[in-house]
Image (cartoon, rainbow, N blue to C red; front, side, top):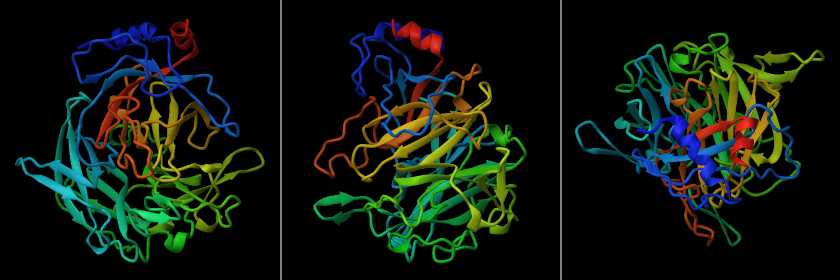
Length: 437
């Protein structure tokens, strides 16, 4: 297996770098592990109204040319547990069981919606043993879809949440197709004390969810699809023992309305909340605190009053599905946001960094048409290198390859439906300059 240094060194071969995804320089780089392509520095093309200052510490992303090749299901959010394994939800596809059979999940069938749970065993991102641990049914009514979101394994207890979508998986508005254009609320958390073998269901329902929100008829929510901040193995780097979650939402009234504005993959704002994780707390809304901005001295303010929640990030028509990771070696938070409007076309994703979860957030890279239809981006802490600079970007891609008459390409290569793990390098300025000569 080549070392990280070896893989980084080939970047200088690929310096006639392109401004479009998946068209790297002509050099051929051989790798023994995983699938491969010529490394390149991902182009950053932020819109003119981008509200973030550029980062001075992480100034770009290099794709090192190595990716996994797992072709089953999507919606993977790995949580690194105390036993050394990662545990993740999944849905809309089949995953092999230990007995060689396969579990098949489908979250878009209303009262019969089913989500899956799996264990990811191993230390090599391109050679993981992924095993389904079973399926769980969860009635989506009065919505049509019920999908996995925030998932955390902490002190041997797995907290697994689902959120709702409507009105259907494919919706026609005029001549255009949309995918789940209404984002519903997070329902609550099911709980497992045996690493996903058996479960206690949430006491909440889609009609009476954890935070009392509704997304019916396109009404906007704040906490629709939350995801736990990845603080490392068994949440070892949480600053205060609390679990933090990020979620995307939208305001009411919307200053720039559009059909499908707040969907599973598009929105206007990012919100932040926290809770001390326990079986008693996780489904009790009164145990949560919500970020509500900063006081006159610039100190972050938290409240237990949901009505006072304020966005952590506000970029109208440019937000969507969000995850966050703490990179302990760099002492940085990394946030991945996908603006996937109009929900089933090309999608753009951007990565931000900050010294604190409450910001300020700075732009690392804005990846226009990443995937070209990449979604559910996250950076698992288990695969961050000791220097913090090499990591693996986890996502899925290209579920709707030609819904709007444009065939989606795998850019960068390997961006297929299923679990994708792409090896990346978080560049500092000297490294970027070196490979741009």
